[in-house]
Image (cartoon, rainbow, N blue to C red):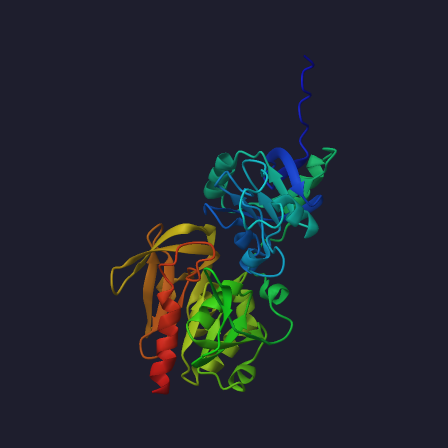
Length: 385
């Protein structure tokens, strides 16, 4: 019997400290540099890869089986993958789900995203937790030819995310209306035909399922680009304003977003923010944000609502956080992470203005926090009454 020749590595991941992981490449070929994070979700890899909040990042999936349900058009959170690349334990198998329309590798290749399999993701995750989110270079070459020294230098040359405004790169080019609601069996995505509240949503990298949740809560949604001014927002005469999730340093995006938010606050309109929107609302109110060691990325994060003591299991995706010690008088902390005590929510004491760090749209993840969309709708109803 002829022995099988060993498989040569066709991909490698080089960290800025000189550590190199070898594996098998899939998806696109080439080289990309980014910040490396890990995500602990057991499902939803397509939603994660298409979440605009992952701009500038490569995602390590701690769950070993990624790609086994393929991909399909319904699960995209935006038109194309935004995460720079993917790191997984096992190479993807043939998809085995009735909804699959394409293989994960083919989908990534067609959209120019590099992936590597066969990596010891436990070791890599421990390194991220201990050292902080590292800067890395990910390379895929079917012939296995790598200039390791050059890749390490590329990783060291990556500028990082601190001080970087990434929202401009993922926001919409122009305003548009949104009426698609949450997916429901057997109809799929239905249309909102009986909206009660006129909402302007600012797109800093908005996930589609957030907009669907707003529509399902009875909102007629108009989406504006991240650079919209307070005058642009108020000209639409909304009942409420929504601040979306997004990537990058909130302080950098806040250079143009904070004046808009303060202009809206001056009109006493109901306002709701998620993730980056939460952080920028805090900045507009006078608080500060900080870069986290390795961030929160997953679908199993316990968050406590302080006023009720209720614990929600939530979806998280953020590398910056609001410093709760800097919240001004009149701004209350409403939610905290039970993992590390970091801030996960705020509200104004005297106005219908609130925000959360976690993702109540649950795509992917649990739906414990969907009530926040209904709370936003109720606040608009109360103001109108």
